[in-house]
Amino acid sequence: MTLLRAFMSAAVVLMVMAWLPAQLQSQGGKVDVEFSEWSTVTPNAHPHDPAFGIDGRSLWYTGQRADVLGRVDMTTGDVREFPLPGRHGPHGLVSDRDGHIWYTAQAAGLIGKLDSKTGRVTEYKMPNPAARDPHTPIFDRNGMLWFTVQGGNFIGRLDPKSGAVALKEAPAGSRPYGIVTLSNGTPVFDLSGTNKIGAIDPATMEITEYTVTEGARPRRIAVDRNDVVWYTDYPRGYLGRVDLKTKQVQEFPSPGGRSSMPYGMTTTADGAIWYSESGVRPNTLVRFDPATRAFQTWNIPNGGGVVRHMVTAPNGELLLAYSGVNKVGRVRIRKM
Image (cartoon, rainbow, N blue to C red; front, side, top):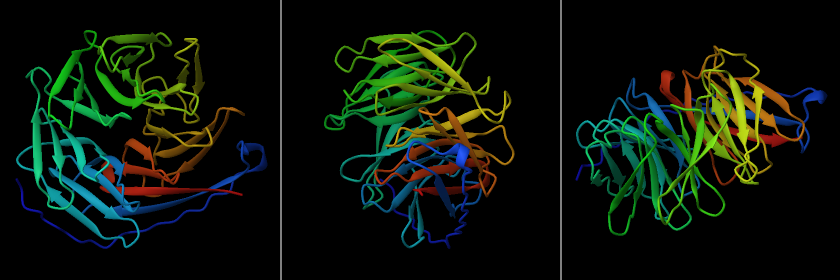
């Protein structure tokens, strides 16, 4: 158990409006974007991943170097941080249906659960010490928590009711990284040490691999409304897609070029793909329209400092963590 340590900080809000030329219209017409940002309470917290709270107003983040979880009230701008017990090195996080925050404690080799009301932390240790660095968590539609283990090379499943953890070893050297779920509940993940995407059967935990372009190294992953999987090819500077039904693969050069290092990504309900180019200074926020194959790009006002992950809130807003500049942000998207 830990005691809640609450901090308040003044939110730094920056809004940038960007209007697109007619030739870059999306499926639904022109869009404009508005950036808002807030500073972490602890200096050099290195916010790694963001998550959306079920209260509809909270942006949660992992303070990886400060061993805290943070919560921003996006309505009032209040920021609070919750200390974790010992060196946890929190990496990824996700909210459950009750509003509690589950996170991967990469430095401690466990999954943690933060009671968002009391600040109490419950730890779930790995049954195999080789699963030393849990990476990204996600809930499936049945409430099971799935997670990747990058260096240890596993896919994990945690039953929140019993606390039982099951592990499935991934192919040698594949380094599972980002993870999402398809509409049928199947977890899909990128095998960042290879040019493959993996899917795991929720019942049998058998892994199926899908090969993409030779030399590709998918970093983050997203799934669209048609269950097509998209990935950012970090070392080659591409946005990629793979249809798991047909196994068809397509690639699109990122606007920033081969050294753009595409990283954190998500999708929105209109079918658009959003991601950040971490090799561009300042980092960019990129929108790709699959229907027109048009890219739209905005500079991130604070520079970004590497956007390692982003998520889409139920209301369609994007939540981002700016790891190198110790800020978290929200992007509002409006169509004209």
